[in-house]
Image (cartoon, rainbow, N blue to C red):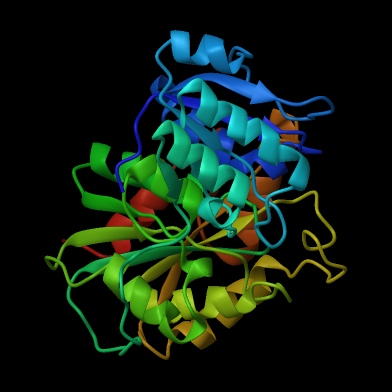
Length: 336
């Protein structure tokens, strides 16, 4: 799948920033690809890049409209269809990370064919995966896991890739979600894989490698989330993780989109070890990544110190304070 850059980021009329996390992720990690944003009336998200009309975007060299939103079920709202058709008519390809296939919507499919434009459904792959086998494979793997969905698992894995490479590690980010695929140019959206093949798909994403090579696997959902635990468990088994980092958002009391209470970090560590031992008996935690965006710096540092003392693990906000402490723990726990 070759998606032409640069991008015009489509945010629709999403109600909050989390609903546009795909757009934010791409803009944070590939800012040179994001020329502008397209927003509808009532949109509560703002990437801080120019608002452009479709004609202005084409004039500035944009080649693809990226639907940078997520929602429950991955649906495409009816009132967005005209916006997408207009983008195709203006000369833009369209790429989406939603579950619904762009070509399954007649008006979009007809417009793409009429104007010779490409439709990219990043969440869907043409790859055929085997069932997971759980056989030990060489190489080292780290998985980011969460107390909830949308708590920073992707950002943590990307920050660790950057930090570990700076320290001389042979390390690669492995995308398991649509935003990660947009950012890295490879991977598979695990939540769109038929359930029987989830662990096999992760084995494909992070295959056998050199003994000291690290695959940093982007986590999805949470083992405690009523909606997404099945995906999280299959991902854990397929990752055959040697190490994991727990990701957490400290201001939440309920899991996103449901009434289930948020689990504690300790509960996530315990359940991840218990379930992860099925495919790697030696799985162990190496750090805690906390999204402290909503906290003042003093509050953030105090909370991180408390987490370190409570769990005996380095705790940091990977975006705000970096990942050196976690990389130190990895180097000490897994010497080359």
